[in-house]
Amino acid sequence: MKKYFKRIGIIGHPRYSSSFITHEIIFNWLLTNNYDVVVESKISKFIKINKPNTGSISNIGQYCDLAIVIGGDGNMLHAARILSSYDIKVIGINRGNLGFLTDLNPNTALNQLQYVLTGNFTIENRFLLEVEVIKHNSSFHLNTAVNEVILHPKKLAHMINFKVYIDNIFAFYQRSDGLIVSTPTGSTGYALSAGGPIISTSLEAIVLIPMFPHTLTARPLVISNNSIICFEYLDKIHKLKISCDGKIVFSICSFDTITIKKSKYYLNLIHPNNYNYFETLNSKLNWSTKFFK
Image 1 (cartoon, rainbow, N blue to C red):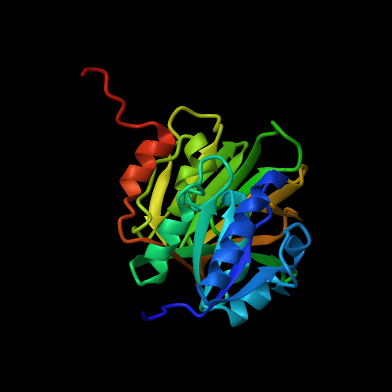
Image 2 (tube, rainbow, N blue to C red; image 1 turned 135 degrees about the vertical axis):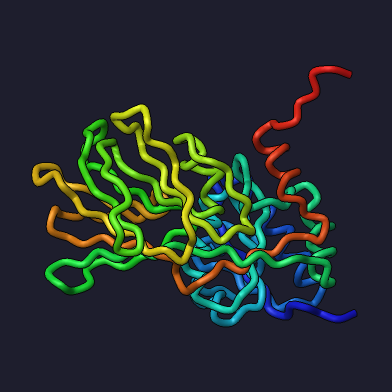
């Protein structure tokens, strides 16, 4: 039988300690099937296995062919920002809540993995966003986001004034609590909660969603993912923050230049051949409820 992957990494720190049993089952199953397995260093001490090979997420990205992320979408987002820099495939087993990115069911994960590891998989190349903050003509912050980049005030419920430029052309002025700049991957996350559209992950698009705008006419805007987005901050009093996937947060000042564009890196996410994106939407968002029998 042909092996499509030789060295496999296990990543992900689930919210509940009881979920580590999935790590142990997957680890032992992979060893039984003669795969080289590397376990993320931070979780190896929580798993009851004998002297595993361990490494950082970067080590796994560099030396493994496939990374299995066990946990919720938060675990996947954290791992994806690192793994996207490497030529590695990634698949997720859901031990969280919704699981849009970690879509394998833990109860049937072994059967699904067996199916995938024998070549029955599809690959999605999910693009990331890159945010750069320039201070005094030199780059100060540079980071990536899988889901979204958010411009928001330092204090909650403070409206801010800013202009948005797309490809060096003025697009709109905004007075609101902030702005969400989302990938199609992030369109089912925070962007959805803010009233944004669901964008098929196959589309090369970016969506801009105002957060609680002080107008009745502000609407989400979908643009090409080849566009470059720049902010001009008009309020000289309040400090702002930029958030990447809700985890990486850094402050910006009124004279800083903020640029958001498509990153050169991609998340190589794989699914079983029978994966259906719309079925995922139906099950996760409770669509298509039958009112009549």
